[in-house]
Length: 115
Image 1 (cartoon, rainbow, N blue to C red):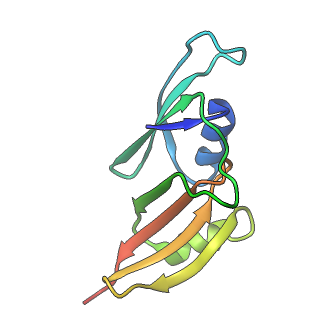
Image 2: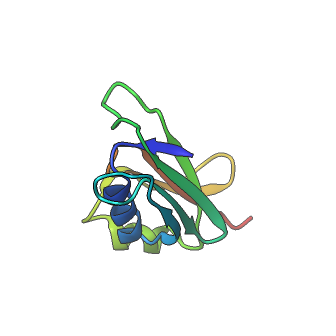
């Protein structure tokens, strides 16, 4: 679970990069959204109201998300999100991109490289 300052803004941003909203809940927040469960492929992540946006000195959250095609995802997102690292191959057999979300948290999208 990731605590964020604005669940609605977080949900909207994650939907814009390809996540699907699985469920949302209201716990009396002014905008009616205090908790959300979202999915990307087979993985799920939960967002809860009450966190803080990260700053340049902190990396409080690093999500690692598997995807089928890192290069296609990069092409789709490169002009719309904050890219930290462009597509690259790692020594541990993954092809990855790293982006920063609306809360300045890092998301690594990765796929296995052919052996």
